[in-house]
Length: 256
Image 1 (spheres, rainbow, N blue to C red):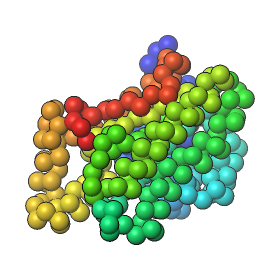
Image 2: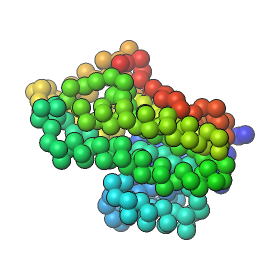
Image 3: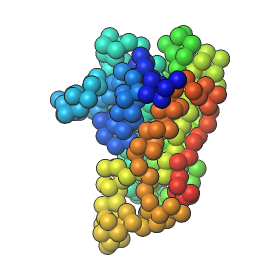
Image 4: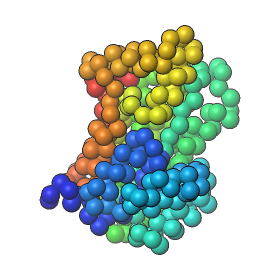
């Protein structure tokens, strides 16, 4: 199969697809033939600049079951039943355990763990009925390591890896795979925001914080979104039916 035709005719949903890693994944899937639906919590008009790229753009809050239902109906009506689901929506909050409010903790868990669960629950039955499906969850190296200032994020991503394995086993007899991809620091707006917050605490500049993060891994660089997108594209193709129940770390040799 030619690389550019990996996803021809497939319908894909990418949560968190309006920016960062999610947008790069959406673009890569679309470039290889998929019909891609992306959405964010804000009104679709907020993402009007992306319409020219051919995406179906809707409004979606993965923390709200009714929002998921409405978005799913829109995708099925306009593009067809989703065959590929990439859960890329995610947030983090800088706070240590002793300073975490219930509200902040629950917000991270709701978005990073409960949201993917709800999206999978909405899409998995049709995938299994069709005998083909690909689910990829964007987790993090934080799932297997730790950072004292991101406990909710670490917990949510560890839970997401566990969810991935359970879904993989459920889907295995019906042609549905489920994998997680766990990057280290990736150069996105979310990273730049984190570096800004870390800089305020340390007294260094955001650029100095970014360089410190980059130099902490053996490759002395930040992972780029396209590297994650290419891996996800492969996992969502017909070339990877045996790749399931795996957490694939893209860590540049780093522990975090």
